[in-house]
Length: 350
Ligand SMILES: [Zn+2]
Image (cartoon, rainbow, N blue to C red):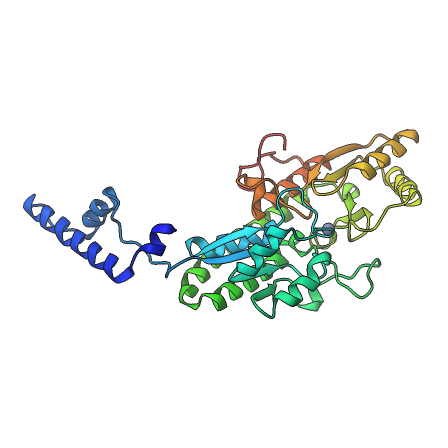
């Protein structure tokens, strides 16, 4: 990145041309017949393959969630530099910006946040920042017909749209549009990268549908720490129960726990799931409550609900996060499928 910033483009092109002429002259001396492929191989071999100019310094993007940051990186490629505010295990419902977050956002060329009241504590800040910077809530304008409501917040929508890859594909389109507006000269690269990502997300959706269809119908109940899986349930025909409501900010009372114990027993549910960004306390209380009634329930695994896995791992990408969730859920609830997942990249036993 640094070399690009201090490199003068016309000068660099002139140097490259000079190198190409010298290499052709050298090949001529060897009496090798000219071939474009041979010339390119020669250039590549000595590290001088024609470069694609990103057009100056990368676009600095700050994204709130890992899922948005992942999409921005995939679409932007070398033309962007993306910082995610919320890493692995961080809960966006209660997240408050740190001093360094605020500095990063006020210096960014583009700030991407989710919207739909996911980052409840940051809304006011983004409204203010939008007067000075390009700030986009990437899920805010999704078609209303695709969005779910929730009894907890009658005047709002469920924000967890990334749980349905077919809806996330629309968010990817919005992110592409935002990047293109910020850097029109990179439009073709962004469109090509976005098309590749959309194809992968489409493949992921088909994988989800095929493995989840192998869970016996009576077992298609997903019980988790909070209501993050509503879109998942609707997309793949699962009953979804969250101990806490749509936001982790709400508290689950003892009455709620004992009512859910009755559901576990009555429906003979054998596995429940913890979430990496939410405390396990309620899930443990539920398992103990069921055991007191003689019903054995296990933790089917830890799901990535509102945050992806650690950066640099497969589970730390959107595709890896959903692959992990779906493969874990399907296996714990009785589908006979491989633990390696959609692309064969899941860590054994995760
Ligand atoms: Zn949530």
